Image 1 (cartoon, helix red, strand yellow):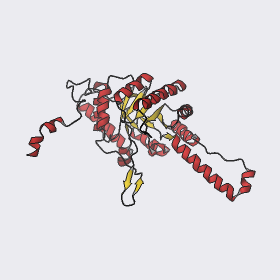
Image 2 (cartoon, rainbow, N blue to C red):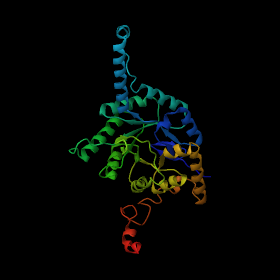
Image 3 (spheres, rainbow, N blue to C red):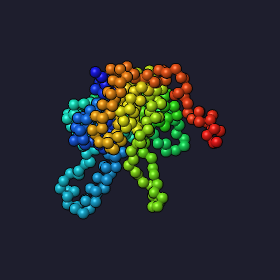
Image 4 (cartoon, rainbow, N blue to C red):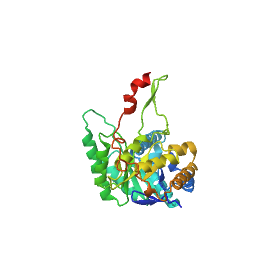
Length: 332
């Protein structure tokens, strides 16, 4: 009998498959389907401060236009106000009250005081944890990497001082040394890290000569960077490691666990293969474990991490060494 239980952010999970934040995870009916299919936890759609600010500005513009058309209304009624994050928080609370699996909030803010304010509001919804989305898009050539990292470390400490629920950080790979930064996050008290977030990248339509914002999913095999870092991080952190991006099949989950991850987040595979695919993935993991005589994830987690193998170069290689050395043969 196999046991797929694991731990993420200090939260006990029945298996390692977590549904990552997306528009899908904001649909209550969809969340029920995901839970029924076997999801161990869900990360609710991200609360973006930038989106709240844009909606508020648009709302004010509409009110101003309305006031010009119907001036008498502005004197009869007090000015309406944008709801801010309240609608998101109400829906987040509803998801937590409806589901029987852990619900994790996701937050992405612009300013330190808003990070803290929203984190405190989110905690009051009763969710099991909060995921902070960290990235920085430099606006000038003078900003240095160290100062950006210091700002994020200070922010983690400030948030941890104000809330009691577990905190994870979902970060991009665009740090000068992700291992060093993750180690510092660990020392700052984060309960888990997610490697790695997929960032928005601009696209250009050459016919219209305009920038576009395509909706694109990850591809199978995109998990390899996460696999490398899961293998490097295993055994070196107090925090748990969650792998993300390009994880489509049960075999992909097994690979991440062998490298050393505690859990995975999936999104793209659910858009392509529907919620029921989680059941297939779990069945495949169990079948593989039974074939290998493993009864728990601990039996094989980290078995192929840097600490778990004898070859010291597997996780250090950055080039196709064998191909480069045999390039003359390939040309013949």
